[in-house]
Image (cartoon, rainbow, N blue to C red; front, side):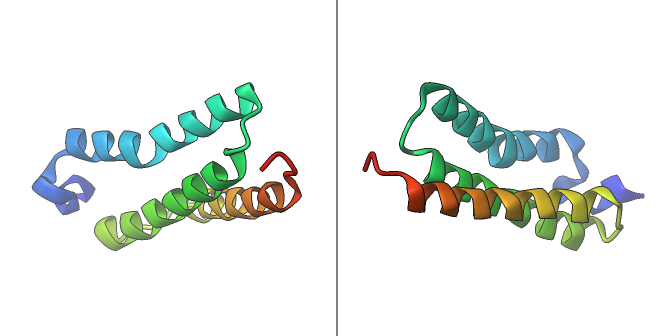
Length: 93
């Protein structure tokens, strides 16, 4: 069973980790974007790297594959790319 492969066999810990590692940085990015902050580029890169890292660690732990893993890894990479593009074109800094 997949839950047996999670750290401490606990879905609550995994859910908290997911929230801290993926949801919090993306929420910070959304808040910065709504404010029109110059930090959107770096925040997007950080959030994208964390999403990709989460997927890599997830596959390593649960050792099962889903359509969603490459899909979200691609979304994370696109966040990195867009963050880099925004950072390059941002003249406010």
